[in-house]
Length: 169
Image (cartoon, rainbow, N blue to C red; front, side, top):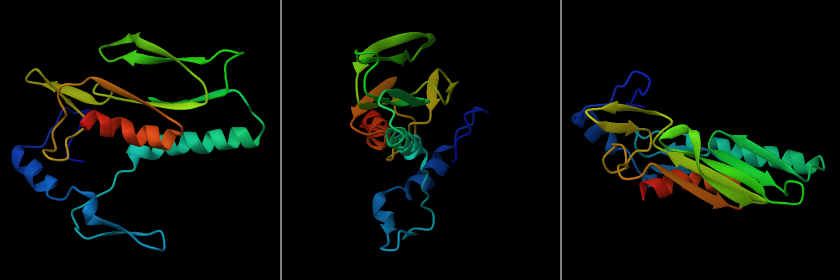
């Protein structure tokens, strides 16, 4: 929440240091009544990291319930392919992280979820460094060294949660 990618604004070192003190699953308690309690009032949750995956899984469940056997449901960098495409696997392209007009790789998949996390959707350049939305929980700064990670999984919720996690790792 401290970054504004549209305006090219990043927090200073002191703000990041203060904010990283509030990061960690140990500060979150899931209660029996499906409520969440924070042991640290500065801790926040952003469900954007799994919302698209959840929505795709719900959409696929509705399609299956309606008798649909072959479909491709996609929301941004997250997809699920149901069944095959006219007797062959679906061919899903992964966007090239440095050229929107190109495909970096094509994957033949059937009945599988796919999620791509990259440094090229929400970012700005400052002093020659790409400041993007996939952040290190230790520093609060953008992860360097990777441009894109794609995860394949049996369901979209898992793929959506794992792709930024793998990017950070």
